[in-house]
Image (cartoon, rainbow, N blue to C red; front, top):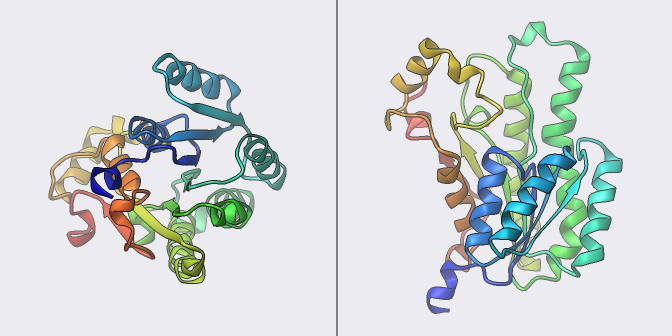
Length: 256
């Protein structure tokens, strides 16, 4: 395979939540590595802006403005994909949300929002894209998790539950789908400079507490997570499946 194992030439990738933060960084990385991408996000304006930027650089990028936390949005997204492509080589499940509270303070609606967005949507997207991934000669799924699914954090028990569940889903599907030539892996970031946590990162004392427990001594950049996700899509990682790589500056071996 030579150096091609470190490229994604001609690979077709679906990235959910692909207009901001880690999702955008993953899509951008795949494009720079020679792949084609289809992003999905709720805001049509955000999708259009991302696509215009990429098209100006000569990249093959497409998108859908859909809310995949519900079944109608997932159905619409798959119809868009099938109209353009007859296969998928890569699926990156990045859509997620969080509401930071102590466990006893959640309302039933808040709990359901987190469960449906983070866990149910990921499971359903895996199932819906499976037939298209089977048509690839080297299918790869990468689920974007969080260290919250690997260890205790101060708040957000339902969020941690969903990320732990998708971690186990990753392992199960890796075994079930190995015979179809589909690898399934996960990436678990720690605090990363994304819109999801920008308000928290305005609290200097809180940032100091995070950094004090992070051996690398800083917050991650989205591109640092994206590079690991892209690696898991390459032929360079062809014997890696069922794994979760923590991109956390050493946090999970240090802890709060």
